[in-house]
Length: 188
Image 1 (spheres, rainbow, N blue to C red):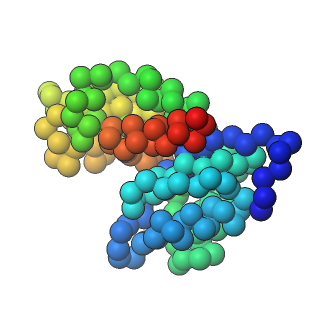
Image 2: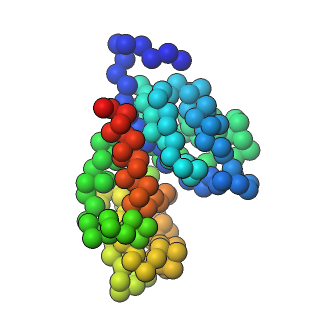
C-alpha cells in the first residue's frame, strides 16, 4: 500500500508478547516487518528479536493490535498478544518514570505496559510481594517496577500481571529508551 500525501500518518509502537528467538513461537523480525507492511503500515522498524516495532499508519490504534496479531496468525501457527501505543502515550510513559534512580541500572527498571487501566488492581497483593529493595508504581496503563536485586529474582515481577488483572507486556528501561529513540528518529 502506498501512503497518500493527504493522509496523516501517526507513529506507533507495537509491543508483541511472547515471541521468541527460537522455539514454538518464533517470528523472525523480517517476517514481522513484512506482516505489518501487508496490513498497510509504513516505515516499519524493529528492535531486537523480542517484538518491539515502531511504524507509521493512518489506521486507528485500537484496531491495529488485533490486525497485527491476525496477520501474524495467517503466516505462523500462533496469534500473539499485540499492544499498540501511540507515540505520545509511549513518550508519556517514559517521561512519567517515577524512579529516575533506576535509569542508571536499565535492567533493573521495568515498565509493564497494560491493555487498559486496571479497574480493580490488588495493590495489597503487590505490596505483600514487594521486596524491601523494590519500588513500584501504577500510573494509568503503565506499571513501573524498580528491582535493583534483579527482576528475575522478583516474586513481584512474576505475579504482578495477575494482581493487576489486566494483560501486560514488560520492557526494561534500555529497551524503552531505544524504542523512544526510534520514534524520535522517525519524526525527525
